[in-house]
Length: 547
Image (spheres, one colour):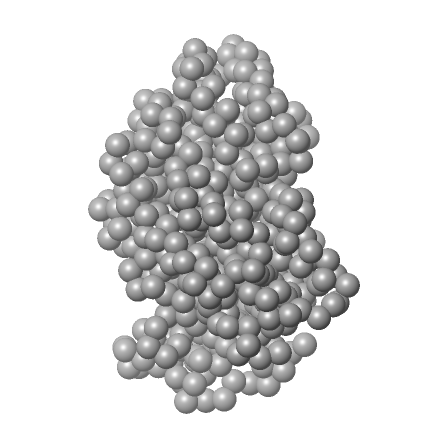
């Protein structure tokens, strides 16, 4: 039988992952809920915690909760959900401490007392949803969007309605279906009030408190596996040693080498500690940030007791390429990706890029989600029959971002996922499993060499090699040199808490993929300024004033 695995970089189809498996060879689905991406904590905000961005609130309410709820309806379907340590911390902070973010603060503020800058922020950011799925179907939301496009003046009631509609749009369909008051508020359509907004925000916190208990129960019932990403979502091979870029002739090395293998260990330890404190056990597997791997980093995972990791099929193709067998020749032998490999004691699953990306980017545009789901299932069947004579124990790994795809689907992907899961439950040739379950029953194929790279272009070009990103690595090295001179342990711990955030991947991601608001650069600089403040120094102008 063929097995299938699904990896999503942050939920079942998130960098969360989801598993599918065929009865002859199991499959699993993996969803990665990643940090990933935007919600970095401000160091001080009065007596409470404040987050600069609200991505984790929004995706927590709609996706982290919703994806697990959909899966919960299918007793025989298993999946993997992947979390970074910092994401788990943030979810707990919202649930236990009622942490605030700038979006919720502005939502609750009366339009009469908003500054012009705050009004501008709301008008600019509160349309950050898919136009076709969320804005156009809502008559009032579309009207407000057209006012924004035409640069018309927003009245106080316009702002009030935008505050309410934007936040209501982030509830999962199941939450709306089960809550009469939310349905009434949606049907109301306009003329929202202060009490309406307060209820909406209250309900968001209510959903956030349900996320971890839901995952705990599914884990206890052995219906899911929890895997982790290194704490602050760093690109581990670059943290280990930026000289890894010498493997790529087209990428320039930073001016000064950055190499801190111990930091790789610490990021893993921190995520593992958080996972154990929340779920009562260590994670056995990991989705390395952005699927970034190297032989040295694989050694870190092995030393830390991990049993498996996931990455992209392109890494396998490069790893098997030799002077006698070309990359293209290897790439055309697609049956080789449908089994796990073992590199020096670490099991590695390589995702099916075509199918993973189809779920992330292609099927969302199909108007009939059931038809899209059946197309995916037909791909699974074809792989099963095509590979059954080539690979005895097969597994199809679907690894994708678990939080970002679903707003582009009709009804947040509910019908799509339910169709897939229902078919897996009933199928005689397909079934789902988890990575740990699969490798406990089947041997992995030996892999002699592990080529470095990520799931994007099989290299590290998104995070290093450009002038701007190499400047950031230079900055990190200079800051780290100063931290290493600090003798007082408590002070050094405070500095390293902030520095580990700077080792995260997204700062450089948004240098490569232009981020027009400048939000990330401002947050990045704020962490640097805070570090220098603790050091009792002024941050150098070449950092602060860089355009």
